[in-house]
Length: 381
Image (cartoon, rainbow, N blue to C red; front, side):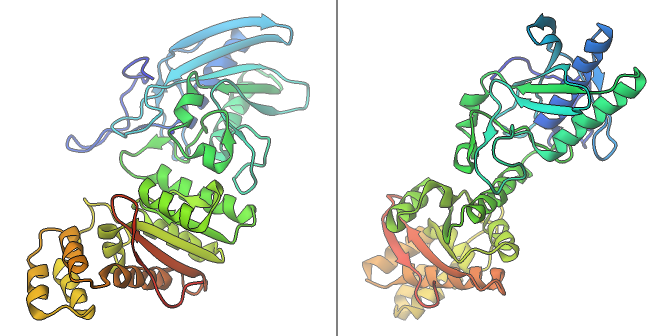
């Protein structure tokens, strides 16, 4: 979504079977732990280390502190605590990032005020869970931090009026590897998390970004968006239709996640772009296009070649092909429009998912060089 230390937690990630991948903690959980330690130090002069927090589902992880600092500036006293994020075995861009919470007094009656420090982004477009101008600290992490402030304030008979500034050193560079710039979150990372726990390879963060991309496009009043399987197809679709960046949804392999969300939050028009093999899987009803989770049915693809006019010998050859690309090459050599047929069947499969949203959908298939090798025909917008 920097390598400092190997494990920020006093305890390992949540217990999993020995054969399972190790889970980790979200940036929101780390920010909450830092907030708890910093606020307690502001009130008592002492940092709890390790610091324990309570997550939404009742888990109580403990975190070792990587940063403990107190100081005074023109605005008064402050304390800050930092946690090195441990994402477990998830390939998370924020793994080992340092999440720092600085807490200081706020005006009486103000409650909890959130600020974006170095490396934390600011929302600049409508359609996200937070309005433009707000620091990109999502609602659940905010709620966790507010609750920890209430708990500590009650223990120390303090009013609990505080400013919490979250920073992630190097976060602006890390954010370039996320969808934040496209979503209109500028200047750094988002502080995320709904459970506080990172489940390895759950793909939840990717799907979350797809949903937020749809929300931003709707809020911007767009009438045409594109969901593509990768950068090559995305570039081809953007050039074909002249779409702005905000209209480009990072669908990746998660066609089903995009289509199901659009069923509930429709837009007038969607273009799906992708490589031939991935679109074959979509055409065959697969909604997760990852190579490890779905496969091309090559005998069916060979029969589709027959629908394009191939003779029995070519169909038999296609049925023995090693890959979908090999079948496509056979079709191209015979000047048969297999790319168009696959794109049309993929469009039909997508339309079946979004119904009854009545969206216009078209599909563009590209080769590895970004050349268009097939487009859907029929009931596109």
